[in-house]
Amino acid sequence: MPLADLTHKLTLSVAEAALLTGIGRHAIRDAINNGALRAVRPGKRAFRIKREDLDAWLRSLPEVPLARPARVVPIIPRHR
Image 1 (cartoon, one colour):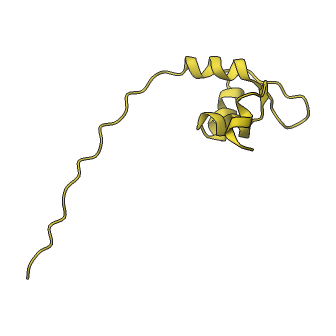
Image 2 (tube, rainbow, N blue to C red):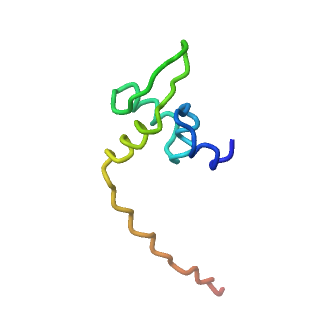
């Protein structure tokens, strides 16, 4: 499903939430299982996540500073 189609949905599956946020499916499921992310289970297996709950969970995540870029070291060929 194209990403643009997901932005208008009111509820998302775990896979759709992962695709939309760039956060892995396992991390989304872990957040549901530990109560950090609210979700409902209309059937026996699949979770459905309200878009507003996903947005609230994302806002609650701590901001992590980006790592410093790696230093680029030029490779100088050895002359024999």
